[in-house]
Amino acid sequence: MKKISIIILFSFFSKIYSQTNVGGVISINTTWTKTGSPYMVNSDITINSGITLTVKPGVKVAFTGQFNLNVNGTLYAKGKADTMIIFTSNAFIPNAGQWGIINFSDSSTAYNFGTHIGCILKNCKIMYGGYDPMGLGTGAISITNSAPYIDSCTISNNQYSAVNISSTLASTITNNLIMNNGFGGSINSGGISLYSNGNNISDVSFNIFYKNDGNPAFVFSGPSSIHNNVFVNNTNSGAELILVDKKAKFAQNYVVDNKLGCGEIMYNRDTIRYNTITRNNLQGCISTIGNADSLAEYHNNNLYGNTSGMASGNYYEIANGVVRQYANSISTYAKNNWWGTIDTLKIDSLIRDYYDDTTRTKIIYKPFHNSPDTTAPVTPPTKVCKTNLGGGSIKIAWNPNPEIDLAGYKVYWHLPTGYSFANSVNVGNVTSYTLTGLSSSDTSIAVTAYDAQADGIKDQCEGHESWFTYSKACIVSGIEQTMSNNQQITIYPNPNNGNFIIETNITEKQTLQVFDLNGRLVLSQNISDKTEINASGLNEGIYNLTIKNSTGLANKKLIIIH
Image (cartoon, rainbow, N blue to C red):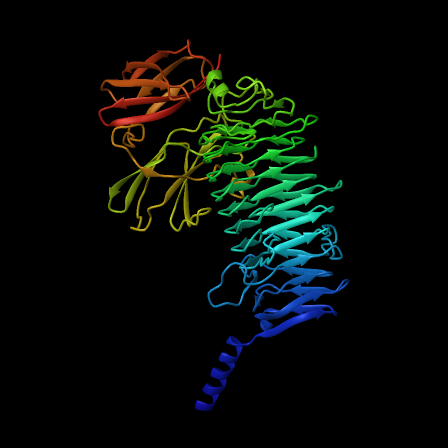
């Protein structure tokens, strides 16, 4: 029995410490399997043209130095969601730049979506690479005149860009988490740098760009479709773009909570449409520098709530983003956008153009939306606050969203990553909810809003669910305070023409206040448990309605349509 135990123990430790040393040229079709993992890369690897390296799910590829994986043939690395393939440093304490790059050359095999043959990175983790001795921001993944398919990967903690593309072929980069990558050198981004030309349209979609140092998307000179991405909490600008082709589209993206806003959109032959751009700091949301023959179009976006910027040289960066213009460019069209207000004087104050400085050109912004564009991503909730009720219970309250197609809200908590939580609950179309059974560590609680098309799958990238708004402590005497859950308020009809009825189950004297979306009080009166209201003198639009009584206050959304 003792002999058998020794044999089993030896077999057990042999499996733990098994590894395969690799390096040099791969000149025959080769497969790396989980049983041979980890594969220790001790020198540069080159996959010859016409040769395929297949990497199976669960394989770990560990680079022992600043070596590259050069793909002149086919790299077929297709993991699974629960057994991802890992490309990383072998260091005990890994750091960015401890290995080189995965380099797809112009002789590598482009992925064919019909035959499912060609270069692919799917369900992979690419971490701690991107070593670039020249400091040009080459990227942990470098693509030159090739078209690998990069899908459902985590590309993180690399020295410079996550992906650097210079190609006449169409690249497809979808469903990835691109996070914590370094600044991409003097001209490249911390996320994706895409330099494309020709007639093939690259697809960059359904990715989350989170906490990159640099510009998460930097798009230059070419046809591309950048859509349904989330750019959030990036250290530099949210989405710095250089678009010079009429085939370049930036649509239905979420640009939120970035340190330097949305960055720059230059050379103007582009369409920026159906994006939600909010809560960015320091710079305005959209910037343009154009040539005399250029025409920029910024339509149907939600552009509001961004922190003011500064004037610098030939540029202007304005608070709620709007546009900075170069003297030689022609008029910019920015129609049917939601500016967070319907006050034209306020909108004018957000725009720096000919009417402020005759050396600039005009920005044409009329007509504009009276409420958020519903094709753009849902806007995040506002005034989210929390009250600790004790015993592991916390009450969350928020203001109603202004979208006319709003369906409800979700509350998130426990183990926040910055882009996800462990727990969530769909609370429906209410503006308060009490969480129970919380632990002392559950201090980060967030709320999102969603529309009727949300189905629980990729809703935030699809634009059907907003990004998170984190709760802050409620102010005792302010708009954040809410009535108890057993008090009911009904408004009907809603929408209405300004004449409506308010019913409550409270018999005491109450005060009704109606605010426009600029926070300006436009109506105030006392009400009882059932009161007819005449607000027909108010303009069409969305209003925040507040009802106060001795227990606190409640907030409702009021829509007036004449």
